[in-house]
Length: 498
View 1: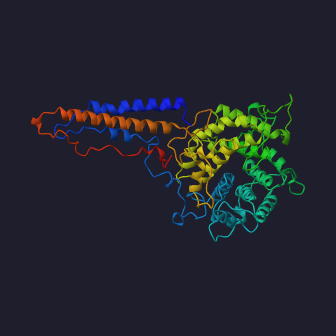
View 2: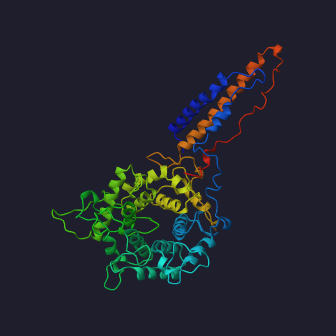
View 3: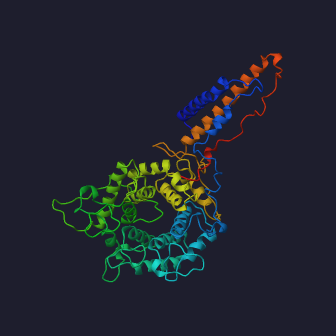
């Protein structure tokens, strides 16, 4: 909805751009031979009329079009990028997110995921059609996400049970899970396995190998407790390294929070807590025992809340040697975990930051729309009670739909004014109405271009009426080649590359 302030801002922008567009019309000399100005006001304006700086393709074009067999990607799969490492992961996330938004996927999309399951119940990251399963490279992360997807879809209990049986068989005696069987366990894989067990109705506290630790105890083995520095307490490490100091890991901490809070995808409701997350209460002489499950989620939430505040409401990449740039994935998972743990107030600013900045991550990758990123944002928006059909001006649901096979039942909700691919996805801090800076610039440019053209034509008519007959110039002719510009600003079209 447009407020008086926004209308005033649009009018001001239009007036300023109109003045800028009129300058060439008032100042450029007229060529005596043709009567045409040396520069066109309309062409100057349209050259910079795209907030995104791109004029490549429509919103439903290559940035988010359906994959095809000719592109080398299976027809039932979401996304056009190489699925070798994330095929099952992104397909599962897409199905969870679309189901939450009441989009019924194509049978081919569900069948593709079912066909990826191996005889022993696990899923690999991806396997080509007809290829045999290799047990050593079956993927606990892909299996955990596929279990959550099939649980949400319903009517696939046999496949879900085979998947959870595989997870329970691959749990290690210390209660953890590894990415691939036979390798050391890690926090991310253990957290995702806990999510899957919870989605399937299995209590992680009772899940263990004979004589081994439970899944919750396994997850706790990665959390930093009272024996570490105060600023690290509550965070999770990816894997403990013998002889090396503990190092908090942002994505491990973000994904572990949802599991510690007893949640899974999609995040729907949680008991809201009015108080801020509680930091660990440590004795004067702390021991080296693990953080209890009762304290785990609160301690992790407190650490993540502090990191979000320090980073401008987003987490930063902490990969060794990498620049400290925004980590969209960790930020989104933090929002999901905070909401699941009852701290929606602490999650709101980070959700707003994602609304204002997440479009490029979701839709402007090397292969166009990234279905895993887009689905994660859809789930984040819904959990935060924001509109995924108009998330900072972006219709995330439509972007996700367009990245895969045509659904049986398409999107049926959302703000009709939301654009599918805005040039800029920026929201004001206190709302998520879909009004963006790109929209304002586009309106201003249209007003400015139109005013400039009218001023230019009016000046030429006056000059022609006052012209000397000795010049031989016709008094009423339109300058050669001159016509009002009909080019539409391309601000509603996405850039293909970041």
